[in-house]
Length: 488
Image (cartoon, rainbow, N blue to C red; front, side, top):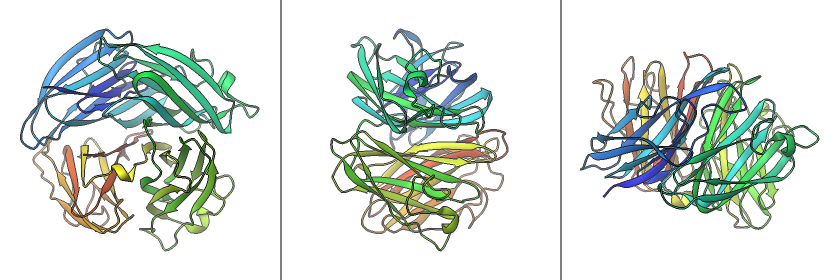
């Protein structure tokens, strides 16, 4: 029996994709907010260690009618890259569902061109929900606008999704709402840039001329959503993240950094519970320096969100305690907790000011973590692109972690397993580039060896989570993307 999973991607205009065990959506390829044309690629990993996967890609137009369908096979414990998405019609603007005979996971990469050059990545999701939270929505924010795509995660022929989007201001903006109807399997784009055809900055902004806040989407049918943060002017970058169907009282963030060769992060937390609560961001030990940041402590009302940036000084960075110029270089992780037992969601933005690069990833619920992780896309020397895997131990005891690389689909080089120990709360980065010890490995000198494949990460005595960064230092523009690895 085939299982299906929803994933979203953007082709000449827009694609939403679905695949085994997951469901998600992606922003449109050409946003009303900027003349950027997107091309998408999807990496699908077969998690089955015994059987090959029979995988079918089915594309849907925005009115819910099928546009194209094609089947493929993926070997056991292997992966396959679909780039470009040649099965979709030219100029396609819609969604994609991937069905499979085995358990699979998938990530989608979006490559943009036109006003700048962009790379963004997001995960496919295993199921839809009738409520989805978006912790960071903005317009006219120093050149950044968001737009997001909502996909009806139902199968074609099922009921329409009637959705309501509620916008809640954080530091800036005015509350607002809008409604829409989305056919089963289809998707719709909502753009906050002034002048778009959906709810936008013309009514969401306040006296400052901007909106910085969050949004909640409710629906009578299961839906998924993906948000794009896009700047095509003073900081040309694109950062994508998937919407949250549920929150958790504790959130794990595998990678947080400051003054790291120019890179820094920003943490956006949203209270999706029903009561005001006191939130604490607890930073893990500094893996590259001698100084550790102090805990961030603040209150969040129901539905409210707050940004804390690991750069600069208070109060402009959202902190009351950490001046990062004084702390210096920091690379570690963080755990977010709250005193009221409220459910929270969080994303992390990673940015490099010059040349401008940016990416985003979703925080993890430690209670949902496992001792086994799927990484659908890992690469080295792939037309100058490479990845870095950041693993965090979210359990209470030390663990031996192993990264096992899958079959190389682009060459003969076979990397060795990475094996290391992680203390509770600690994190470690392994980069698929260069030589030990600077790449975090003790066994793999990647040299000029080309590798495109996947990986499985396991821990012997604890629960772990991980993210994957993809980047190129040679290609002009914002060539940085981040996605969550999958616990299973």
